[in-house]
Length: 51
Image 1 (tube, one colour):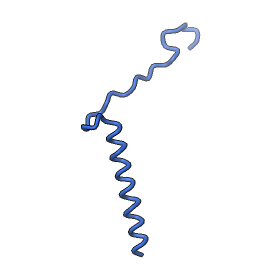
Image 2 (cartoon, rainbow, N blue to C red; image 1 turned 90 degrees about the vertical axis):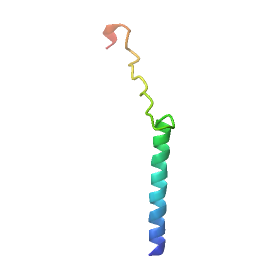
Image 3 (cartoon, rainbow, N blue to C red; image 1 turned 180 degrees about the vertical axis):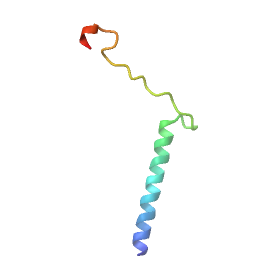
Image 4 (cartoon, one colour; image 1 turned 60 degrees about the horizontal axis):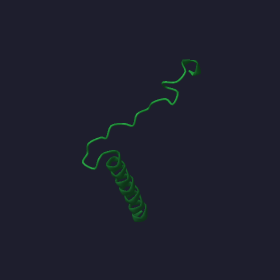
């Protein structure tokens, strides 16, 4: 029983740390979100018949 609880605690801690790391990487490190990358289509500004 103790092994199951320890394993569950380890999984929870790992998931929490992973979420914090992901959050930190998605921000500038200070909690401010960086602007999303531009999602321009590669066909934008080319011949309209290609669309």
